Structure formats: C-alpha cells, structure tokens
Length: 360
Picture (spheres, rainbow, N blue to C red):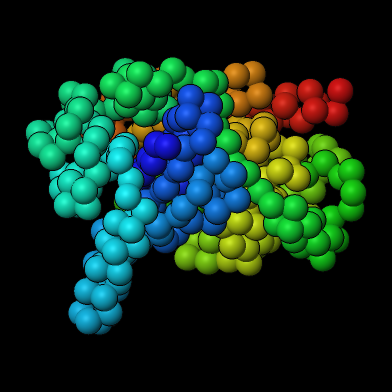
C-alpha cells in the first residue's frame, strides 16, 4: 500500500492548487495513505478532505516564529514534528516547497522517492526533479500536476476542491442568520484585502477600499442584495474604511470568522468580489462566482482555476504588468496604474452581469 506525503508550506491558494494532485493520486491508488505537511494557518481547509488521512501543520516559518518566542519550545516542536512524520513510514514525497531543506528532511526521514522542482538548483535532495525557472507560462495547478508524471499517475480532473463538514456548514449558516441574513437572499461578499503571503507588501495587490466602498454602495442601491465584508482581524482597518463610507447597511465580518467559517460562508455567497489572494480561491473551490482584481500578478498563472464564464478577472492593459515574475516583485515606477486605473464602473458591470445571470 503506497504512502504519500505532500509538502506545501505556502498559503491558502497554493494549498488549494494541490487538490487536483490529491484527487489524481487517490484515484490511481484508492487504498493509499496521503499525508499533508502544511503551515498552521491553512490546516482548517484540509482537515475535512476525506482523501487526506493525516495533516502535519507546522511549517519552517511556524517553527521560526515559535523559536523566537522560546528556543526550547521551538526545538521541541521541530523534533516532535519529525517523529510524528517518521512513524508513518511514507515512501513517496511530493515536494512543492521550492526549498532544498524540505527535500533534505524528507531524505532524513527515510522517504525513498522524493519528487519536486529543481528551482535554482534547490532540488539536490530529490530523486526525481523537474527543472523550473518560475511559474510564468501556465497556471500553478498545471505545474503541480507535472509532478505526477515521474510517478506515472494521470491527472483526474483539474477543478479545485474544498471539503466542509456538515458541522461547519451549519455553523456558517447560523453565523449569517445571527447577522440577519434570511434564507434565499442574494449575498455578495467583498474581500477588500488579502495577500498575506506578501507580508508588508500585500497592499500592493489591493484595490482602494474607497473604491470597494463605492462599489458596495452602487450594488446595494441598484440590486436587491446583501453585502458581506470579509477579511481577517489584521485587515480590519481596511474594512472599517468601507463601513464608514457605506450609507446602506453592510454586514462587517472582518476579524469575526475563522478560516473554516469563511469557507462555509463562501458556499452561501452568490458572488465574491475580491483582490488577488486566498479568498478568491476559497470561493472558486466552493463553486461561487467571482470578480477578482489583478494588478502586479499574472492572472493566467495565479488566477481562478479553471477559468470560466463565472469567474471574471479585471485587469488594466498596461505594458509593465505583470511585474511579479519568478516569485519576485520587480518594483513599480508607474504609481500602481495597473490597480489604480481600474474603475468602480467596470467592476460593477462585471458584478452586475454575474448577479443577473444568477437571478435569471
């Protein structure tokens, strides 16, 4: 019986991008065991996936953070993680990390077959490696599916998946009911932040919260819908700007939901309007229509997957975009025109078309 370990220390979108890989493995080896090594922040979107048997939620970044607080605790957590993985005797690792240290640890743990990308010659501890200069010519999902080729496992559908327990679904519905949302109401979510993996540079991907507020006001005025503002606690100041500008009442859920709650809420939405980030991919994985705003990042690589008529991407045709290439932001000498020149009207029209299609 095959035992696979998937290694992905990245954010929400990147983890969801691996779900077609998980589906293909399980279809090819129905009786296999699949373990997933991720970071602590994303574990809640994996725990209800019935194709995943084990989740190890502690990335290198998590350990560094814990170590800074307490060296002893950091060391204890690190070796506890290694012991926990080793006892399951995985025989194949798929390493999405682009970091030679994960490949080294997989080798140290006795995982004989180690498949991953050889980015900047960081694949030296892999037994099968695919040369990679960056994600530039196709969607990340397609790159991830390439790792199945050395294992001779065929792809089995390309849609993203996000499983939710019945308890999580009930919890999300109860939360909406508590805020006065009635069954059958048209729900439009607006996520005015996102991009946590960019750290201090996340705002470079953000459309103006003032424009988001004007958009929300227009949707509330012209359509019979409710607006939900969605972001985490750290991003609450962005939501506050919107709330203070919107005359009609919007439901501000900023900082009031956990990741699994957001996933459940996405399932109840008729439309999500958002920046490029994890919220977008949560919605796509739940089958929710989206309007997303892309600036520095190439939507052909990191956009809704698979693309389709229910997912509209708004961009500006400026010659300098995308300026985030090969995992590096080149910097902007054009005052973020790719984001700032996007108008409220063009985002509204895209949203209105999707709302009318939903109602019709």
